[in-house]
Length: 442
Image 1 (tube, rainbow, N blue to C red):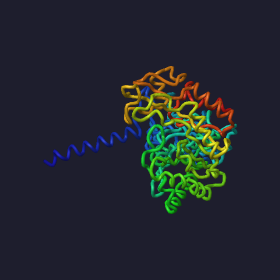
Image 2 (image 1 turned 30 degrees about the horizontal axis):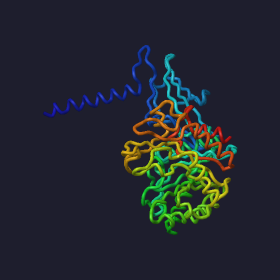
Image 3 (image 1 turned 180 degrees about the vertical axis):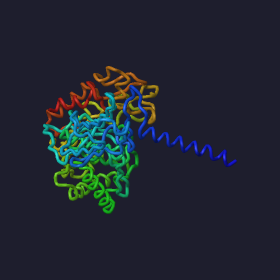
Image 4 (image 1 turned 90 degrees about the horizontal axis):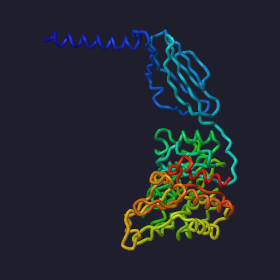
Protein backbone atom coordinates (compact mmCIF):
# COMPACT_ATOMS: atom_id res chain seq x y z
CA UNK A 1 0.00 0.00 0.00
CA UNK A 2 2.79 2.45 0.90
CA UNK A 3 4.64 1.60 -2.33
CA UNK A 4 1.57 2.50 -4.41
CA UNK A 5 1.36 5.93 -2.74
CA UNK A 6 5.08 6.56 -2.85
CA UNK A 7 5.66 5.89 -6.55
CA UNK A 8 3.15 8.56 -7.84
CA UNK A 9 4.65 11.05 -5.39
CA UNK A 10 8.19 10.44 -6.73
CA UNK A 11 6.92 10.73 -10.31
CA UNK A 12 5.21 14.07 -9.52
CA UNK A 13 8.42 15.49 -8.06
CA UNK A 14 10.43 14.35 -11.08
CA UNK A 15 7.91 15.83 -13.53
CA UNK A 16 7.84 19.17 -11.69
CA UNK A 17 11.63 19.22 -11.65
CA UNK A 18 11.75 18.53 -15.38
CA UNK A 19 9.20 21.26 -16.02
CA UNK A 20 11.29 23.77 -14.04
CA UNK A 21 14.44 22.76 -15.90
CA UNK A 22 12.68 23.32 -19.22
CA UNK A 23 11.88 26.91 -18.19
CA UNK A 24 15.37 27.56 -16.80
CA UNK A 25 17.29 26.07 -19.72
CA UNK A 26 15.22 24.21 -22.33
CA UNK A 27 16.70 22.18 -25.13
CA UNK A 28 16.53 24.18 -28.36
CA UNK A 29 16.31 22.72 -31.78
CA UNK A 30 16.95 24.30 -35.11
CA UNK A 31 14.31 26.97 -35.85
CA UNK A 32 13.27 27.39 -32.21
CA UNK A 33 12.70 30.99 -31.10
CA UNK A 34 14.10 32.34 -27.83
CA UNK A 35 11.60 32.59 -25.01
CA UNK A 36 10.62 35.45 -22.68
CA UNK A 37 9.01 34.52 -19.36
CA UNK A 38 7.21 37.56 -17.86
CA UNK A 39 7.07 36.40 -14.24
CA UNK A 40 5.78 39.72 -12.84
CA UNK A 41 3.38 40.41 -15.76
CA UNK A 42 5.26 43.56 -16.75
CA UNK A 43 3.79 43.37 -20.24
CA UNK A 44 0.29 42.22 -19.29
CA UNK A 45 -1.28 45.62 -20.15
CA UNK A 46 -0.60 47.68 -23.28
CA UNK A 47 0.12 50.96 -21.42
CA UNK A 48 1.87 52.00 -18.22
CA UNK A 49 1.00 55.43 -16.78
CA UNK A 50 3.54 57.33 -14.68
CA UNK A 51 4.42 60.92 -13.78
CA UNK A 52 7.40 62.76 -15.20
CA UNK A 53 10.45 61.96 -13.04
CA UNK A 54 9.09 58.56 -11.98
CA UNK A 55 10.57 55.28 -13.22
CA UNK A 56 9.00 52.55 -15.34
CA UNK A 57 10.68 49.35 -14.13
CA UNK A 58 11.02 46.23 -16.24
CA UNK A 59 12.26 43.35 -14.12
CA UNK A 60 11.21 39.85 -13.14
CA UNK A 61 11.87 38.60 -16.68
CA UNK A 62 13.53 35.28 -17.53
CA UNK A 63 15.04 34.41 -20.90
CA UNK A 64 15.88 31.08 -22.42
CA UNK A 65 18.18 29.54 -23.35
CA UNK A 66 19.73 30.97 -20.20
CA UNK A 67 22.82 33.10 -20.74
CA UNK A 68 22.77 32.63 -24.52
CA UNK A 69 20.34 35.28 -25.75
CA UNK A 70 21.10 38.82 -26.85
CA UNK A 71 18.84 41.37 -25.12
CA UNK A 72 18.05 44.85 -26.44
CA UNK A 73 15.80 47.44 -24.81
CA UNK A 74 14.61 50.21 -27.13
CA UNK A 75 12.72 53.45 -26.46
CA UNK A 76 11.01 54.81 -29.56
CA UNK A 77 13.30 52.65 -31.67
CA UNK A 78 16.60 53.69 -30.01
CA UNK A 79 18.60 51.07 -28.06
CA UNK A 80 18.96 52.13 -24.41
CA UNK A 81 20.20 48.96 -22.70
CA UNK A 82 21.35 45.36 -23.31
CA UNK A 83 20.85 44.21 -19.72
CA UNK A 84 18.22 41.69 -18.63
CA UNK A 85 16.44 44.39 -16.60
CA UNK A 86 15.57 47.95 -17.63
CA UNK A 87 14.54 51.17 -15.85
CA UNK A 88 13.06 54.02 -17.91
CA UNK A 89 12.97 57.45 -16.22
CA UNK A 90 11.59 60.09 -18.61
CA UNK A 91 11.98 63.74 -17.64
CA UNK A 92 9.20 65.10 -19.85
CA UNK A 93 5.58 64.24 -20.46
CA UNK A 94 4.65 62.30 -23.57
CA UNK A 95 3.87 58.84 -24.87
CA UNK A 96 6.83 56.52 -25.39
CA UNK A 97 7.15 53.01 -26.79
CA UNK A 98 9.40 50.57 -24.92
CA UNK A 99 10.35 47.49 -26.93
CA UNK A 100 12.15 44.38 -25.69
CA UNK A 101 14.03 42.38 -28.35
CA UNK A 102 15.58 38.99 -27.56
CA UNK A 103 17.76 37.17 -30.14
CA UNK A 104 19.13 33.62 -30.36
CA UNK A 105 20.63 31.98 -33.45
CA UNK A 106 19.42 34.85 -35.61
CA UNK A 107 15.79 34.43 -34.46
CA UNK A 108 14.05 37.13 -32.41
CA UNK A 109 11.20 37.36 -29.92
CA UNK A 110 9.58 40.65 -28.90
CA UNK A 111 7.53 42.38 -26.24
CA UNK A 112 6.27 45.98 -26.40
CA UNK A 113 4.56 48.44 -24.09
CA UNK A 114 3.53 52.10 -24.19
CA UNK A 115 4.60 54.37 -21.35
CA UNK A 116 2.29 57.37 -20.93
CA UNK A 117 4.04 60.09 -18.91
CA UNK A 118 1.95 62.81 -17.30
CA UNK A 119 3.87 66.14 -17.33
CA UNK A 120 4.49 67.97 -14.04
CA UNK A 121 3.47 71.26 -15.64
CA UNK A 122 1.96 72.23 -18.96
CA UNK A 123 0.80 75.30 -20.87
CA UNK A 124 -2.90 75.33 -21.84
CA UNK A 125 -3.38 75.68 -25.58
CA UNK A 126 -4.75 79.08 -26.66
CA UNK A 127 -8.37 79.29 -27.83
CA UNK A 128 -10.91 81.84 -28.99
CA UNK A 129 -14.07 80.31 -27.50
CA UNK A 130 -14.56 77.41 -25.12
CA UNK A 131 -15.36 74.05 -26.68
CA UNK A 132 -15.87 71.74 -23.72
CA UNK A 133 -16.34 68.03 -24.12
CA UNK A 134 -18.33 66.46 -21.30
CA UNK A 135 -17.30 62.84 -20.69
CA UNK A 136 -19.81 60.69 -18.80
CA UNK A 137 -18.88 58.35 -15.96
CA UNK A 138 -18.84 55.48 -18.49
CA UNK A 139 -16.43 57.21 -20.87
CA UNK A 140 -12.68 56.78 -21.32
CA UNK A 141 -9.81 58.79 -22.79
CA UNK A 142 -10.29 56.91 -26.06
CA UNK A 143 -13.64 58.71 -26.46
CA UNK A 144 -12.10 62.18 -26.26
CA UNK A 145 -11.01 63.96 -29.44
CA UNK A 146 -8.49 66.34 -27.87
CA UNK A 147 -7.74 68.05 -31.17
CA UNK A 148 -11.27 69.50 -31.35
CA UNK A 149 -11.89 70.75 -27.81
CA UNK A 150 -10.40 73.25 -25.39
CA UNK A 151 -11.49 71.67 -22.08
CA UNK A 152 -12.66 68.27 -20.82
CA UNK A 153 -15.05 67.66 -17.93
CA UNK A 154 -15.01 64.05 -16.74
CA UNK A 155 -18.09 63.14 -14.73
CA UNK A 156 -16.07 61.00 -12.34
CA UNK A 157 -17.32 62.22 -8.94
CA UNK A 158 -20.60 60.95 -7.47
CA UNK A 159 -21.85 62.99 -4.49
CA UNK A 160 -23.76 61.41 -1.59
CA UNK A 161 -25.94 63.28 0.87
CA UNK A 162 -23.35 63.01 3.68
CA UNK A 163 -20.71 64.83 1.63
CA UNK A 164 -18.78 61.73 0.62
CA UNK A 165 -17.46 61.52 -2.94
CA UNK A 166 -17.30 58.30 -4.94
CA UNK A 167 -14.48 58.66 -7.49
CA UNK A 168 -14.34 55.03 -8.59
CA UNK A 169 -15.38 55.93 -12.14
CA UNK A 170 -12.04 57.63 -12.62
CA UNK A 171 -9.95 55.10 -10.71
CA UNK A 172 -11.01 51.94 -12.55
CA UNK A 173 -8.20 51.04 -14.96
CA UNK A 174 -6.55 54.43 -14.20
CA UNK A 175 -9.09 56.20 -16.41
CA UNK A 176 -8.61 59.60 -14.78
CA UNK A 177 -4.81 59.29 -14.78
CA UNK A 178 -4.81 58.44 -18.48
CA UNK A 179 -7.18 61.26 -19.38
CA UNK A 180 -5.17 63.84 -17.42
CA UNK A 181 -1.89 62.67 -18.94
CA UNK A 182 -3.16 62.73 -22.51
CA UNK A 183 -5.02 66.02 -22.08
CA UNK A 184 -2.10 67.82 -20.43
CA UNK A 185 0.31 66.59 -23.10
CA UNK A 186 -2.09 68.17 -25.62
CA UNK A 187 -2.42 71.36 -23.53
CA UNK A 188 -6.05 70.77 -22.51
CA UNK A 189 -7.33 71.38 -18.95
CA UNK A 190 -9.35 68.63 -17.27
CA UNK A 191 -12.17 69.35 -14.81
CA UNK A 192 -13.57 66.91 -12.27
CA UNK A 193 -17.28 66.64 -13.03
CA UNK A 194 -19.27 66.06 -9.83
CA UNK A 195 -22.92 65.11 -9.77
CA UNK A 196 -25.58 63.26 -7.82
CA UNK A 197 -27.94 60.72 -9.33
CA UNK A 198 -28.89 61.34 -12.96
CA UNK A 199 -31.82 60.17 -15.05
CA UNK A 200 -29.86 58.33 -17.75
CA UNK A 201 -28.43 59.06 -21.18
CA UNK A 202 -29.70 62.64 -21.11
CA UNK A 203 -27.72 63.24 -17.90
CA UNK A 204 -30.27 65.39 -16.12
CA UNK A 205 -32.69 65.62 -13.20
CA UNK A 206 -34.05 62.51 -11.52
CA UNK A 207 -37.45 62.84 -9.81
CA UNK A 208 -37.13 63.57 -6.07
CA UNK A 209 -33.34 63.12 -6.04
CA UNK A 210 -31.69 65.31 -3.38
CA UNK A 211 -28.29 63.69 -2.72
CA UNK A 212 -26.14 66.51 -4.05
CA UNK A 213 -28.56 69.20 -2.90
CA UNK A 214 -28.65 67.90 0.67
CA UNK A 215 -24.87 67.58 0.79
CA UNK A 216 -24.32 71.26 -0.04
CA UNK A 217 -27.27 72.60 2.01
CA UNK A 218 -25.87 71.43 5.34
CA UNK A 219 -22.67 73.20 6.52
CA UNK A 220 -21.01 70.03 7.88
CA UNK A 221 -21.61 67.86 4.81
CA UNK A 222 -20.76 70.78 2.51
CA UNK A 223 -17.39 71.18 4.25
CA UNK A 224 -16.76 67.44 3.98
CA UNK A 225 -17.59 67.46 0.26
CA UNK A 226 -15.37 70.48 -0.38
CA UNK A 227 -12.45 68.73 1.34
CA UNK A 228 -13.03 65.51 -0.62
CA UNK A 229 -13.21 67.37 -3.94
CA UNK A 230 -10.12 69.48 -3.20
CA UNK A 231 -8.09 66.41 -2.19
CA UNK A 232 -8.97 64.54 -5.36
CA UNK A 233 -8.29 67.53 -7.61
CA UNK A 234 -4.86 67.96 -6.01
CA UNK A 235 -3.93 64.27 -6.01
CA UNK A 236 -4.91 63.75 -9.65
CA UNK A 237 -3.41 67.04 -10.92
CA UNK A 238 -6.80 68.24 -12.17
CA UNK A 239 -7.45 71.79 -13.33
CA UNK A 240 -10.71 72.44 -11.50
CA UNK A 241 -14.28 71.35 -10.90
CA UNK A 242 -17.46 71.22 -12.98
CA UNK A 243 -20.60 71.23 -10.80
CA UNK A 244 -23.54 69.29 -12.25
CA UNK A 245 -26.08 69.70 -9.45
CA UNK A 246 -29.31 68.42 -11.03
CA UNK A 247 -31.48 68.11 -7.92
CA UNK A 248 -34.08 70.51 -9.32
CA UNK A 249 -36.97 68.10 -9.74
CA UNK A 250 -38.01 67.78 -6.10
CA UNK A 251 -39.79 69.67 -3.37
CA UNK A 252 -36.41 70.86 -2.08
CA UNK A 253 -35.23 72.23 -5.42
CA UNK A 254 -35.10 75.91 -4.35
CA UNK A 255 -32.90 75.21 -1.33
CA UNK A 256 -30.74 72.84 -3.38
CA UNK A 257 -30.15 75.44 -6.08
CA UNK A 258 -29.49 78.28 -3.61
CA UNK A 259 -26.77 76.21 -1.91
CA UNK A 260 -24.60 76.26 -5.05
CA UNK A 261 -23.36 79.77 -4.19
CA UNK A 262 -21.81 78.94 -0.78
CA UNK A 263 -20.49 75.72 -2.27
CA UNK A 264 -18.58 77.69 -4.92
CA UNK A 265 -17.25 80.06 -2.25
CA UNK A 266 -16.01 77.11 -0.19
CA UNK A 267 -14.35 75.48 -3.18
CA UNK A 268 -12.57 78.73 -4.05
CA UNK A 269 -11.05 78.82 -0.59
CA UNK A 270 -9.68 75.27 -0.81
CA UNK A 271 -8.67 74.88 -4.46
CA UNK A 272 -5.49 76.37 -5.99
CA UNK A 273 -5.90 79.99 -7.10
CA UNK A 274 -5.70 79.05 -10.77
CA UNK A 275 -8.33 76.28 -10.55
CA UNK A 276 -11.42 76.59 -12.74
CA UNK A 277 -14.94 76.25 -11.31
CA UNK A 278 -17.89 75.87 -13.67
CA UNK A 279 -21.58 75.13 -13.07
CA UNK A 280 -24.14 73.50 -15.35
CA UNK A 281 -27.65 74.98 -15.06
CA UNK A 282 -31.08 74.43 -16.55
CA UNK A 283 -33.33 76.82 -18.43
CA UNK A 284 -36.70 75.69 -17.05
CA UNK A 285 -38.88 77.63 -14.66
CA UNK A 286 -36.46 76.74 -11.85
CA UNK A 287 -34.00 79.25 -13.28
CA UNK A 288 -35.59 81.97 -11.13
CA UNK A 289 -34.18 80.31 -8.02
CA UNK A 290 -30.55 80.14 -9.09
CA UNK A 291 -28.36 82.43 -6.94
CA UNK A 292 -25.71 84.78 -8.26
CA UNK A 293 -23.27 82.45 -10.01
CA UNK A 294 -20.78 85.10 -11.06
CA UNK A 295 -18.26 83.46 -8.71
CA UNK A 296 -17.91 80.63 -11.24
CA UNK A 297 -15.47 81.00 -14.13
CA UNK A 298 -18.37 80.30 -16.43
CA UNK A 299 -21.84 78.75 -16.42
CA UNK A 300 -22.87 75.93 -18.77
CA UNK A 301 -26.47 76.37 -19.95
CA UNK A 302 -28.26 73.13 -20.72
CA UNK A 303 -29.97 74.61 -23.78
CA UNK A 304 -31.38 71.35 -25.12
CA UNK A 305 -34.25 68.92 -24.42
CA UNK A 306 -37.23 71.25 -24.05
CA UNK A 307 -39.43 68.79 -22.14
CA UNK A 308 -42.40 69.38 -24.46
CA UNK A 309 -42.01 66.17 -26.45
CA UNK A 310 -42.17 63.56 -23.69
CA UNK A 311 -45.00 62.34 -21.49
CA UNK A 312 -48.48 61.00 -22.33
CA UNK A 313 -49.93 62.66 -25.45
CA UNK A 314 -46.83 64.77 -26.14
CA UNK A 315 -46.30 65.52 -29.85
CA UNK A 316 -43.41 63.74 -31.51
CA UNK A 317 -40.70 66.06 -32.71
CA UNK A 318 -37.34 67.78 -32.22
CA UNK A 319 -36.82 68.36 -28.50
CA UNK A 320 -33.49 70.14 -28.96
CA UNK A 321 -34.17 72.55 -31.79
CA UNK A 322 -32.45 75.78 -32.75
CA UNK A 323 -35.22 78.03 -31.41
CA UNK A 324 -35.19 76.33 -28.03
CA UNK A 325 -31.43 76.80 -27.73
CA UNK A 326 -31.78 80.51 -28.52
CA UNK A 327 -34.58 80.98 -25.99
CA UNK A 328 -32.73 79.05 -23.27
CA UNK A 329 -29.58 81.11 -23.80
CA UNK A 330 -31.63 84.31 -23.78
CA UNK A 331 -33.15 83.44 -20.39
CA UNK A 332 -29.68 83.49 -18.91
CA UNK A 333 -28.49 86.67 -20.63
CA UNK A 334 -31.75 88.48 -19.80
CA UNK A 335 -31.92 87.54 -16.12
CA UNK A 336 -28.60 86.20 -14.88
CA UNK A 337 -25.23 86.69 -16.57
CA UNK A 338 -23.62 88.32 -19.60
CA UNK A 339 -22.99 86.22 -22.70
CA UNK A 340 -19.25 86.09 -22.10
CA UNK A 341 -19.87 84.11 -18.88
CA UNK A 342 -22.08 81.52 -20.59
CA UNK A 343 -21.18 78.29 -22.40
CA UNK A 344 -24.15 76.93 -24.34
CA UNK A 345 -24.90 73.20 -24.41
CA UNK A 346 -25.68 70.95 -27.38
CA UNK A 347 -26.78 67.30 -27.27
CA UNK A 348 -25.07 64.26 -28.78
CA UNK A 349 -28.12 62.09 -28.15
CA UNK A 350 -31.61 61.78 -29.53
CA UNK A 351 -35.18 60.92 -28.53
CA UNK A 352 -36.84 57.78 -29.93
CA UNK A 353 -40.56 57.05 -29.76
CA UNK A 354 -41.44 53.38 -29.33
CA UNK A 355 -45.25 53.64 -29.13
CA UNK A 356 -47.86 56.26 -30.05
CA UNK A 357 -51.51 56.88 -29.18
CA UNK A 358 -54.46 57.10 -31.57
CA UNK A 359 -53.51 60.67 -32.49
CA UNK A 360 -49.94 59.71 -33.35
CA UNK A 361 -48.48 61.34 -30.25
CA UNK A 362 -46.21 59.78 -27.64
CA UNK A 363 -48.20 57.12 -25.80
CA UNK A 364 -46.94 57.23 -22.20
CA UNK A 365 -44.07 57.95 -19.83
CA UNK A 366 -42.58 54.58 -20.74
CA UNK A 367 -42.93 54.74 -24.52
CA UNK A 368 -39.81 56.76 -25.39
CA UNK A 369 -36.08 56.42 -24.82
CA UNK A 370 -32.81 58.25 -25.41
CA UNK A 371 -30.17 57.03 -27.86
CA UNK A 372 -26.60 58.19 -28.18
CA UNK A 373 -25.58 59.85 -31.44
CA UNK A 374 -23.30 56.87 -32.11
CA UNK A 375 -26.26 54.52 -31.81
CA UNK A 376 -28.30 56.70 -34.16
CA UNK A 377 -25.53 56.58 -36.76
CA UNK A 378 -25.76 52.80 -36.51
CA UNK A 379 -29.44 52.97 -37.51
CA UNK A 380 -28.84 55.05 -40.64
CA UNK A 381 -25.46 55.62 -42.36
CA UNK A 382 -26.73 59.02 -43.60
CA UNK A 383 -27.93 60.15 -40.15
CA UNK A 384 -25.14 62.73 -39.71
CA UNK A 385 -26.78 65.03 -42.25
CA UNK A 386 -30.31 64.70 -40.85
CA UNK A 387 -32.36 65.50 -37.75
CA UNK A 388 -34.65 62.48 -37.81
CA UNK A 389 -34.36 58.84 -38.80
CA UNK A 390 -37.15 56.30 -39.16
CA UNK A 391 -36.72 53.83 -36.32
CA UNK A 392 -39.86 52.63 -34.55
CA UNK A 393 -41.88 55.89 -34.53
CA UNK A 394 -38.95 58.18 -35.22
CA UNK A 395 -35.69 59.31 -33.63
CA UNK A 396 -35.14 63.07 -33.34
CA UNK A 397 -31.65 64.44 -32.68
CA UNK A 398 -29.06 67.06 -33.69
CA UNK A 399 -27.12 66.23 -36.85
CA UNK A 400 -24.22 68.16 -38.34
CA UNK A 401 -26.28 70.88 -40.13
CA UNK A 402 -28.21 71.78 -36.97
CA UNK A 403 -25.04 71.80 -34.86
CA UNK A 404 -23.40 74.13 -37.39
CA UNK A 405 -26.40 76.47 -37.26
CA UNK A 406 -26.28 76.56 -33.47
CA UNK A 407 -22.51 77.05 -33.37
CA UNK A 408 -22.75 79.97 -35.79
CA UNK A 409 -25.28 81.64 -33.48
CA UNK A 410 -23.08 81.06 -30.42
CA UNK A 411 -20.12 82.66 -32.15
CA UNK A 412 -22.06 85.60 -33.61
CA UNK A 413 -23.69 86.37 -30.24
CA UNK A 414 -20.32 86.40 -28.42
CA UNK A 415 -21.05 83.67 -25.90
CA UNK A 416 -18.04 82.27 -24.11
CA UNK A 417 -18.43 79.02 -26.02
CA UNK A 418 -20.26 75.71 -26.21
CA UNK A 419 -20.23 72.27 -24.62
CA UNK A 420 -21.29 68.86 -25.94
CA UNK A 421 -23.13 66.33 -23.81
CA UNK A 422 -21.55 63.90 -24.14
CA UNK A 423 -18.36 63.33 -26.09
CA UNK A 424 -18.50 59.58 -25.53
CA UNK A 425 -21.85 59.62 -27.40
CA UNK A 426 -20.24 61.33 -30.39
CA UNK A 427 -18.60 59.79 -33.44
CA UNK A 428 -14.82 59.92 -33.88
CA UNK A 429 -14.93 60.07 -37.68
CA UNK A 430 -16.25 62.51 -40.29
CA UNK A 431 -19.70 62.37 -38.69
CA UNK A 432 -18.39 64.00 -35.48
CA UNK A 433 -20.54 66.75 -33.98
CA UNK A 434 -17.65 67.98 -31.84
CA UNK A 435 -15.57 68.60 -34.95
CA UNK A 436 -18.38 70.68 -36.49
CA UNK A 437 -18.66 72.66 -33.26
CA UNK A 438 -14.92 73.19 -32.98
CA UNK A 439 -14.48 74.26 -36.61
CA UNK A 440 -17.30 76.80 -36.30
CA UNK A 441 -15.97 78.38 -33.09
CA UNK A 442 -12.35 78.81 -34.16
